Image (cartoon, rainbow, N blue to C red; front, side, top):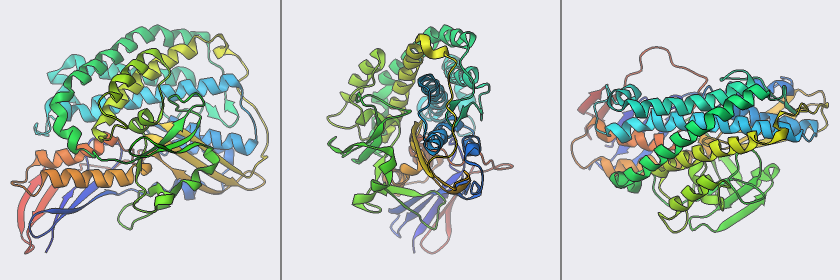
Length: 473
């Protein structure tokens, strides 16, 4: 008889999920499942809605990264209109996306994962959280708050509000950037750039103490997928798809976003609501790949900004070929924060950024549109089909977390086999398995919220069905 360990909920992630671990009669971990317990459902309940509502509707998929959905949706709607949006509108959308990237990466690193890194995996869970960090290292906490605040202020100064703004619309954006907003953002750049560099340096200096986690937190060869620019640099808003193998060899390059289905298949399992995208030529489940900041730094030739390019050189010097450890998603996020701050400064220095022409208008000219961006967590795809009067007939969303689903499943299995079944079960060992998921920073239907207290309860059941151990927090 096998033993079964359940970790529910997985803590310090956006959304709700559980981890199920299966052990044989000898106590060895044989399988692991990361199970998403919420249904998102947006593909169905948007059917029949006018296409021009889609950016605002699908933004409600998430309360953490609504901008990402707005942008991917608006790009799909641009194709339905068959318009080329004004160049200034494209630049403003890019600025919004970088603000989103900064605030989301800061949330992931400083708020959700830093308690494990600074306080320790075995620190008492009662204080293993951001407030515990604030008590032990107040300056670190203040810096994390400030970096996230800056990203949110960029969104607010561009789009009017920080969460679920309605500024991005089919054809562009609905208002130009004011000189006042531009100056306010630029005034903050020196401070936040210094903070980004300081914490990147601090993290690099601490890497040696995390060597065990680097080796066992979803550390394995895989394919990597993401967007790259025509200049072969880091790209978050536009570009074409690139897929590389575990050695860094390019398998597919300059694939138009409209052809994504030739690369990506989608599978489902009865025990989770999160889909399983996979590399179609390799089939399911062998077609595992990763997306997100780690993948983006692996597939691009360079970042394209002075400071981030220096950091990318140091990052790549850790290993020949692609960086395989998912622990280094943390490292990659800090590099992308610095890159985004640099790019915001560059783009706001463009004198055309306050031009008044920011929207193209038209009616429905195409019955199908595909929008793709790089969300903080990876490649985000919105695919719509409409009727001649512009009503949504069919929609498919592949969110970034979904792309990483197979890798997360394999990652928790790797960690569970490392830490469980070799002695006494305790909460710190289970936290290490949760920390693997936090490295990916999954976003699980963030617009849905549980009500009431959600305890963590773990039972270890022996081969005869008896309860061997019980832990609750």
